[in-house]
Length: 312
Image (tube, helix red, strand yellow):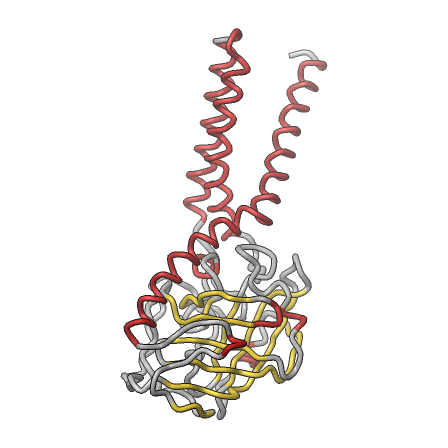
């Protein structure tokens, strides 16, 4: 191969690599939001059904959601068993920054791709109380990807309300402080003698170097009369999952990324071969094949994203 030909091939390779990197950045910023929006729709449908069965209403925090027969106080709800990982826990509403998201149980990367996650699964980070119940309830959320629910979390100030609706009732917290800690500082999730809420996300934006922590105290509660005490159990850590000793959560599996990466290479090779054999229809091959490659790339990016350092 001549030097000029080698330079041409190298140039095409670098162009392809650069294009893939740019597409991955676009996927992180916008494509992840599409996946999160779909997951939120599914979770909200499940939560609405559970709230309807429990007789708990939902609505705008500013108009105050109501629970028929509930007595408004500042007392926490009875303790209950921890939900299964990946299931909806409740509705998180923060009027000041426009947050209206369903909370999912768990803080693994796959959980946080669905929405804000509650620290409750061993092996993924600290295990905290459920929202609305006694103790410290911890919730993590992405700041720049997957819908970026906590993008403006830094704008919260003492006194701002945070409303969480669960099958046990409606619970209003008021922000007490905001601090920045290192990812391995789990002291912010320590048990509390009073009902508290702790929200965590990455800071600064587009970085995983630190964690922004917003803490709030229970201000008022409307506990549903149907809320019952059930055995408080903590599910065991999934087999093979290392114990997480920080606020970063757990990361994904590399096997799907390898398979989808192979699929991308195979698709690109098929386009190249087809274009060389049918030169008259070369642009048609590139057009149809390129669309197919974009679809495969979408799934490849979805498999690669959980392997990156936690950035919520």
